[in-house]
Image (tube, rainbow, N blue to C red; front, side, top):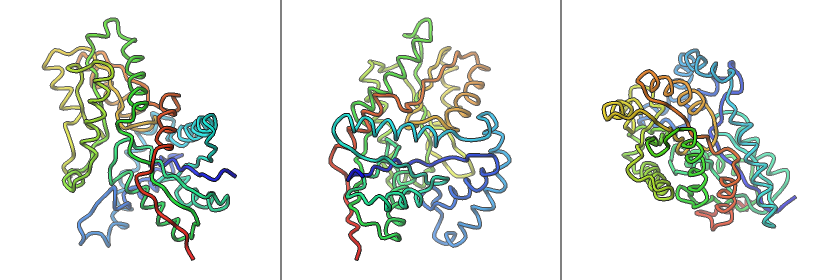
Length: 329
């Protein structure tokens, strides 16, 4: 067994229509994803069950466009195997595991496998290039809770943020160039970056996500010389709370008013295909833009693209942002 274990961390997704409600319940129970006022926290579990039960039928309609399930586990497994191979080619043998926050394989399963193989070091690598307490914070906190409960004997490192990692920026650039090549006149196309939104209550607490999204956008613009040809929107806003914007709908309205007729939408922060790309982008936003006279194309998600896997390997081999000893007695 290699002395290093790497844990790819993702949200996860339902693997069947029947599991949509429990997936949503797990997600809404997470206090990092859904931060409630202190007086409501004792009721978060009950509220999560109620909301999940009532939202599941509607969400099932979205997943029906994807065969009734999310492909995120298979996509993450492909990334894990590619990262193992890349690190091995560099002489850095490591075993790569996956840990999903809201559906199987959950963090508990990853910790159990790591415990059985007894590595010296564990590196947590969230598949969220831009930091947020609701994603990276939640995943790392859950791993540490489970590892402590199971008395895992290993040093746990948290990989550094990589929103501006050169190979990551290069990988996004590749997907944009490939997408623009599908247009007759690529230089006339507006590049719309779309990122997952956050509730403003999280943003106002000082979350670094908005600034890091902006930094990634700026780095990609500079890498490809796209200054003045891009826009940024935030998607996936739900419920009655105030969310980080502008929304895709608002930005599309501005583009139509400005006479834009061709758009390449680029997933920013999404490193794998799942609901937000395969339904929201490819079905919902594509349909909305085409109805308004815009030629729509979508850049590919990064997946196990070699340049992105190289970025992950580079991140793993850089000094960690935090190291936590779990040498429990």
